Image 1 (cartoon, rainbow, N blue to C red):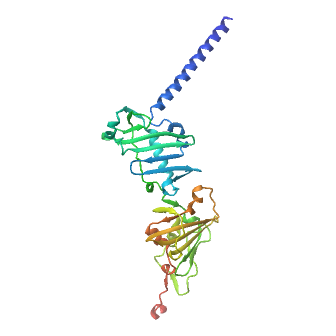
Image 2: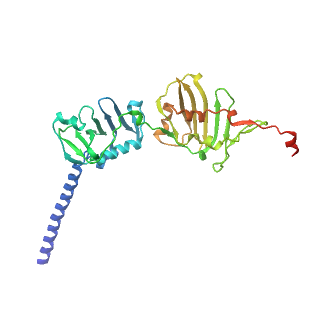
Image 3: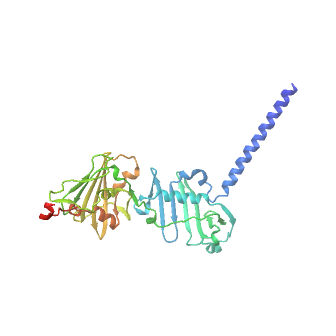
Length: 330
């Protein structure tokens, strides 16, 4: 009987001890999270749906819809998800290090005055963070910050680079298809004959130029594999909402057919002294919201990219030299 009472007492003591240990751990965890500038980012970083960045001159609004980040000020064009993630990770690591001024008259000394960068974060439930980002402390010892609902300013560990220029947030690589996936490429220039390069199987290393006239040959310096690589890491300068461009400004249509059956049609324009591109996709083999929206814009592309696509049949071929009698005899 005495043994049972002793065992019962031990169990009660263990239960009480466990309760205080768990409570203490939770208190420690809560205390640790309070040390962060934005504690909510510790567990809910993937729940962020809106990032507002602003200062007294400009603003950028990044929103996530169906898993795709967009830029409101850039016609809801794609935002670079990697850059958004990098910014959130930087903000996530900022820890409160030292209390600074709580006098609004002194905020400007820390870069927290009128010209401060403002960061607002939202999730499906609304706004959960609103902070001002000021100057970097001397010798890179941290950054001055202030939560909008508090007068108290802080020095935090670490730095964050707040970019408030929507052009810096756009996705510049819009397509990345290796030439091994391409079955054929059909070129339709505005003012010269249509031509095509192709290969029979994905394993083939070489592309062939079809229908070369009998008296012509492929130029020695023509690399069809390089030409076929036009969709690999396809970059743009900027994007605008798709509008009807004047038909007479179209210079070329390039149609890429993949072995998967998917088709990319690129239409090139030279309009208002800019090289432009529109994209049409058929037999799409991706569920990506990104791919589905590529058709919604026309793109400003670099000159080197435009020139690489804007080929004519005669850029690739040359006349076969006529052999002299001496060469024929040899």
